[in-house]
Image 1 (tube, helix red, strand yellow):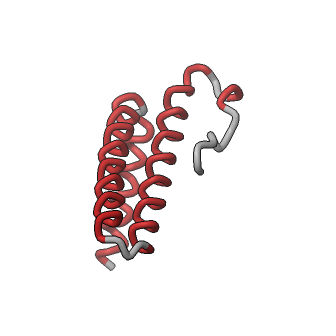
Image 2 (image 1 turned 30 degrees about the horizontal axis):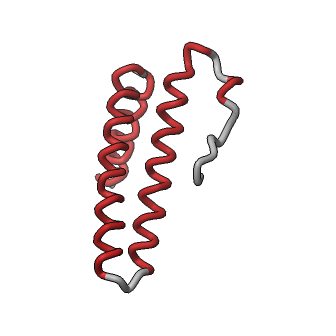
Length: 94
């Protein structure tokens, strides 16, 4: 993603805007986690690796913050996450 909002937020309905902003924030944090962990895997510097992994861990906290706000305000998202959990549990029981 690297600092670009992946779509035009001006085209989002006003009542959906905060949910979409939270989703974009989640995408950005997940992208940052992937980037920092990939760079940590590449470096041979112990110090740099430690810092990159620490920052990646902080980004995971940010994911939790944004997700918490989203789940507080989007009941459909909560229901779909629960549906996804059930599907995984059913599939793993096979």
